[in-house]
Length: 590
Ligand code: PEP
Ligand code: MG
Image (tube, rainbow, N blue to C red; front, top):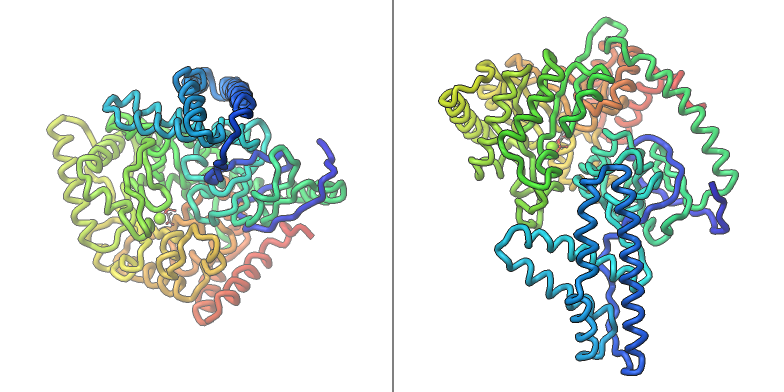
């Protein structure tokens, strides 16, 4: 622990994942380099070459250090990628060409190295050999490190986070987040993002404290500076004083007491005071989360975001690889239900297998995403459908389609599902013939046609993250309008009430799997409006359960009726918070 002479700086953001972290900053700089370009006097060229050589040596050392760290934490295999990086650094042709470029143009070494490495990248990209093409990423990565070193800046990637660091970034991608090593990363702070951006959802499921929308933090934070991250109230405090550390220490103690109280209900049923047993399911992103689901005593998996398999595998997983993942979860949790959502690529999850499956679009959340992509790629989609069907023989699997906007899409998806079943019959491979199918309700047009969708589905699950963004026209990852993303907007509540009412008329179970379901302030409202289950990230289950065990379902229904009469989102929000606070007085920090 160190006390620096730097002044304390408090940066306010949005609390995105609960928890407090204290540690050193790891600056994850992704901004485009502002590359200097100027003429060098012929007499100064020797100095320029010496500067270049120093940068190469420093970068080599840095890569060696990162490699050792990765080998220790993740294993030798994962660390091997850095051997390829070292080879790029030792490439005499690259070095020689950079020096020649300087002699020919008279430009500074950064500009010359950048030009030459760009030429390498272009040349490698044009090579038909896939292995060689993949080296482009290595060259880019190393070139970035060398340029940062020449310019006296820190170059980073999330795989190389040093131990016990708070990652401070402009933004992180969902696959970046999924590659976070919990034992290295104490917390995450981003300038962009929002509570429902996918990277944050992953952070929450990993129990990594996070603050998003912390504007200006990159310019103010120095790599290695000490900081407190407050994921409850949405602050990052750079260079905290002794007094601040003391205050946070006290607060931490109180929070631990509260945490212990909440965790005391972990093994108890999710039952309200008036005897209603509520189904609490888990949202998961990876097959290895079975133990996590079990440890929080979830009633099953309400949302398996299958796209993470695609985002993290370094390739598009084939049927066998997908089958292995889905059946591991189905078998590991049988007889509990496991709802596997088909590929929801697009939006803020634009690439899969390290390659971009979807061309960059002006409005990715309104674009070629999820079921729209799958219906146009039937071979890829059927691979997934067969893998899910086969896993259904190993447990209680259900299938769910994301981003449904109308009944036609469900009909088309079901035709492909029938084809996939027929293909398995021909292969003699078993599957559950009674497998239930469901649609996510996350687009207003789906919400308005629940009665029609009901003819094609066995259940629904409301994705409030997207539903809110589409009902209110608020991009869920745009930090500038994050304050307008209001779960308690009357339009959202009326839409939800319509969905639950129409689905209930047709006796279709309808849960909620968006982030609202994991917030104990909103859970009673959702249940009061008619949700039949809640699906949430496992570490949040105890706090929702704690509230359920201290409330009456009849009161939740009353709350829903009351707030449906109100017009102001802030007033509705306040009513929900009051409902929560009145029933959880013993959790107040005082
Ligand atoms: C949702 O939209 O609420 C949802 C659960 O899906 P995702 O967050 O993966 O888009
Ligand atoms: Mg969604």
